[in-house]
Amino acid sequence: MSDVPYFETPERSERLQLLIHLVNNAQEIPYVRAPVGAGKTRFAGQLATCLADDYAVAWLYGYTDQPFQLQMQQAMPDLETGADDVSLLV
Image (cartoon, rainbow, N blue to C red; front, side, top):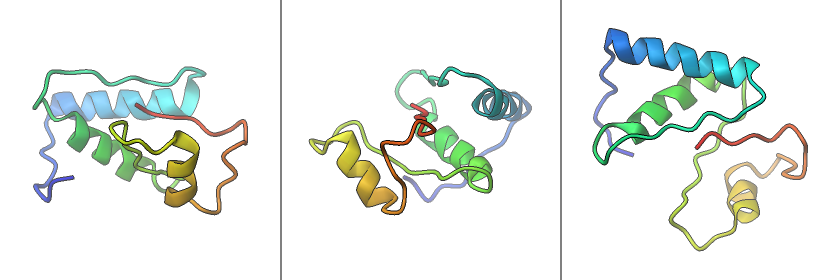
């Protein structure tokens, strides 16, 4: 991820608060989608920062040959990946 700082706007702040609410309260996993270059990765990084106090957060990559379970074991070796409370934010 880039070292460029996250640029907060009122719209982004509102969307970030909505996603935090959904992560905390919804049974579904939020899915963030936007055109290339729109800032999805930086936005997801900001969301992960906001959630880090209440959740175990791991950054996983979809463009790798490594299976999900192996990525989880490497990112969070103390987490039991078979647990029912493991959720993904894509």
